[in-house]
Image (cartoon, rainbow, N blue to C red; front, top):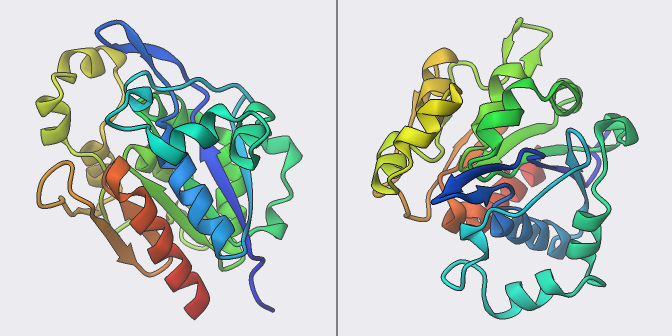
Length: 238
């Protein structure tokens, strides 16, 4: 039976000071760009966070990152993307058997709540178990350790090649001290925990993604669209 052409687009529900006191939350185009790609390809997409709450990453709202039609769509509360953000679902509202793709969008805040997001992890586990895909962008791999394949007792990403926003990028942004104070694993720490191979982008902001079977991951916000396109390519071959 073909996998359902439906996507659970996971969003962080955490909000925390990061950018000189401005909050981190959802990095908007890491959710918006994949949403657009999936919808254009005919997939249904539902936005889900662990608690149903969400907030914007302040930096992701600045003109260098959110502009043009993306900004117009985000600010239009009647647009499909913004409406789904404003009516964020919780995991208990999702029947995972009806989805073929789990996609973890991010923002630094994902490092805070994704490791313990049992509801989102349960959805991802079921999608994976029924032959679907587990995918991410940027800090999204923070959820991978909790996505346990019942057949192996290990993460779906165990031993895989993955990417995400790496240590060099955190240092370049001057965020290391704040992130260390959170006491949460960074993306490269997650890769080590999973005995996965972390594959860095040519530079921290390059458009880059890695495909390893049913696990697909992208490095940063500029990779969000290309990662979603790669996910669809893999999905359509399955």
